[in-house]
Image (cartoon, rainbow, N blue to C red; front, side, top):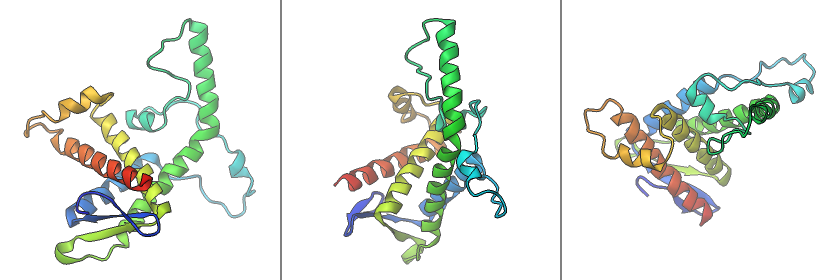
Length: 201
């Protein structure tokens, strides 16, 4: 179990984490929450249906990490638009899609990050400050979403766009300032992979 998820009775997953690993994951989840931003202000006197019809932003985020987390729905980096008119049409479709979906997407990512923080905060330390994290099936799915978002965020900061970039990361010298972030990216990838395998077993 150390370092990777394993199945537990009832369809959940468990992993043994040491004190440093718990601190790193929690810190990254908090940073992700701060990056995503707060949800719409709750106003008990407001129309409860208003939030259902609230429109989100139509422009893509300026921050490259947020652009990776909330990409344009109709942009395809592999296929350039055939004409300026097609480019304009794609942009219009993406803006409309973003307007009606981004608030919900942000809420989902926020809930996943909060689930990570809450499950870590509920841990009972064992010897040497580590603990065994046991997740229900629902918590496992939220963790999977959060791990994916954390890797996307770190990957954007590292400017990783494909597998070739990942291969280069393994060869970074220890003195490279990106090395700690690279190690976190690779470690989270291992956790994510074993959690996927666990949930599919």
